[in-house]
Amino acid sequence: MIISLPIEDRPRSYAFYQEALGLTPVGELAEDGIPEPLQFQLADGVTMMLIPTEGFGWVLGDQPAAPYGQSECILSVRADSEEAVDAQTAKALAAGAVQVTEPTRKPWAYFATFTDPDGHLWMITTTD
Image (cartoon, rainbow, N blue to C red; front, side):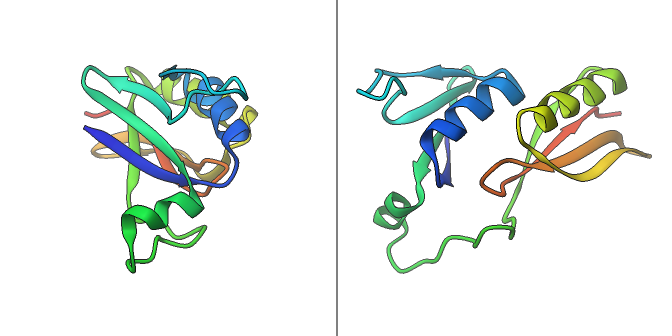
């Protein structure tokens, strides 16, 4: 499975996902020292591909992509504990994420949400 997200700035996204979520880039390095295509390993057989916004149109055709700040999905990362949610969220914020919801306890989980530099909504969560 490949999850593709539009981005505005390859170097910024390359640094953010390594620093904020500890993701490992995969692929051949281009002249700028960043893999092309820019992909991160999420799990066995699952990668996230970050595509410059202008290149997203090649795939979408006439279908518009969601504008900045409008989320079509929530990208969730499971954490083992409330402390891990807090630590991962703090790491993301230090790397440039914008807090959407503070760490919160609900009957179904403890979670926090933030947006990455391109406005994609992420949630760090425990599952009860």
